[in-house]
Image (tube, rainbow, N blue to C red):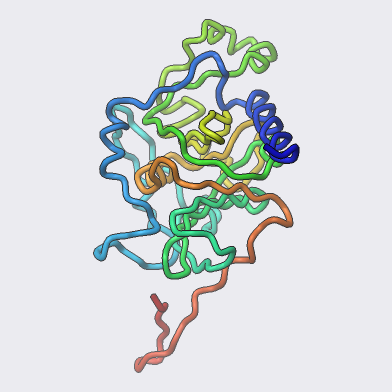
Length: 264
């Protein structure tokens, strides 16, 4: 193992321990429901012939309220969110990443899932201030429906309101849980990095660097991502100059009616 890789790995663990992602007191286990769900997961990289392949932001209905696994998720007011941070397919053929790779563009607050044919599904994200400290690669090592949250002891020491979680049982799943409706756990060399891609009830934080924490998506978006990205998917976290080229605008072409139509 190179010194550079070891240093990056140690830094990643330190970041996660200081953030609100999870403590090391208990390792999450893939639930029975999640295990069953794995069999039906298909990556965005290989959509079916019948999947909608249109471009542009997801309609407001994609952020409507819904009941999920016994919990109620409130609607997200999509009209109050910068449209660029809404879930959408974009042209994105730079970087040479294989289909199915998850690319986290931290500075620009985007997460991409690379598809075939030079496109990607893009999600708006929120990042913790500590999230700017690391760039590297990992794999999706675990996935959780409605995960429990285990605040780090360092956070419990700072916040009296979290003292009740010192028992190691963590916060029960639910709409107010900081990890939201789903969590994808990043591993390196078979070990949990304590770095997460997860949902959040704080939709206002998308597109911002908000407090400490990992990579957060709106709850409706993390549900979508969870169902599309399988275990062992490659995850690349980019910072600053490591970012790939800017997404290309969708080309248009004129048709007989003198209107324009998006290609693809």
